[in-house]
Length: 261
Picture 1 (cartoon, rainbow, N blue to C red):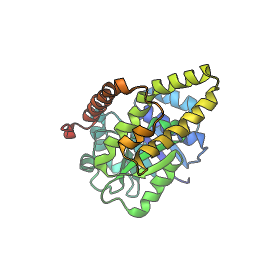
Picture 2 (spheres, one colour):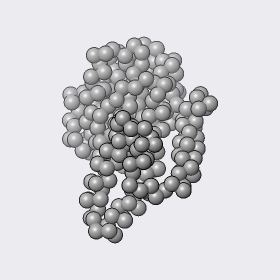
Picture 3 (cartoon, rainbow, N blue to C red):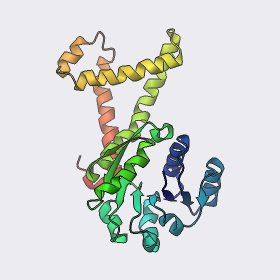
Picture 4 (cartoon, helix red, strand yellow):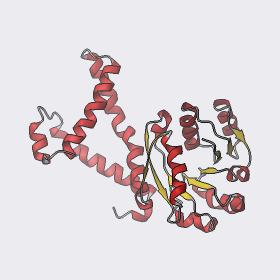
């Protein structure tokens, strides 16, 4: 991809994105990372030899710019470097709580604003990445964003008001299912399967089961009726309550303006 990339902020999301790009051996014209912490920059340079550390202003002048600062620093930093963005630069914010309206306060002339909250599966290039575009974002320029994110999995365009919801689900999926997967894989080994066999079978069975429940012509009662066993019936209400209370609380923390959900 013959574009230059700038990262304003060298935290966890930047590392995930760099890992995904490096996995695919993507060749950019230039990759600049700006961060105020020299330890963070040293760590990134040791892991990714192709990056160059520089100022936030230098990162902002690249073709595609990722914004990944703490919420408290974002607006002040943008105010200091707003003149450094090229009129054709694409700014992709990964800051959860700064919406397009707030970004436009600092960048009123930039109509190429996008937002995403990439899930951890970027690390293995298998992520479904929700992306929101500002209202004036040129349709033709979206191709550059899709091309970039499709290296990391698959990009999905979503309205900005739904971005936090997608993020809440993608963030908690591994956390909610990790222990269940781990235990099922352990049980599979105990019962005669190796780990690869168990993982492959669980992966395909989980998807087909979800499709049976929600993409067939069966009602919920009919789906339950055809199941050969339902060993967690006694705990169903408890599990439902845990999902709802924990997930909705997480959503409210990252999306306080819609706390009535």
